Image (cartoon, rainbow, N blue to C red):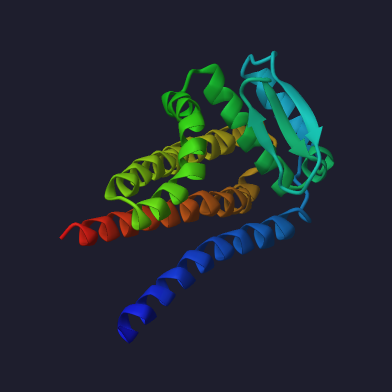
Length: 227
């Protein structure tokens, strides 16, 4: 019993530590490279606009948004939204993040399959994420049918997290290629820019790992309760 409880506590601790470690890595890397200017001296907004124009994408706006690291691409509104620091910043971090978000705009323009699939999953994943835990708790109390339904709903949220990985990695690869080809960064700046993009990717990997681990735990509990 003690060993089981100890193992469970370690498991819960890992679920908490992995995301916190990934977030800390992102913040520290961003802080470091937000102080290092690129040789081009372009702001994040200028980088985003240049890459969009160079790829023949003129229907996407580059907008400033509130918050810290709140940068994102909105496919329905066709906007690349950059936080103030990255919109106005001339750093490696600003250029990397701006290019990454434009990478999503390029995916959208080229009808990238994984982006389309993720977008189609989004409503189901949101519902699954919100409903799953209530169904699973209800299943533990009332019926195995509810438990199984909760696992199915949660699986949709996990699938969304997994599909997000190729979308984000592809956007980062596109970002690096565009930053180099447009001359925003020089050869000696590539390695440092990659560190920013790699650190950001850790948050998605961490989220996916946690989601898969939770799904496996729910499946094992369900299987054990039916033995």
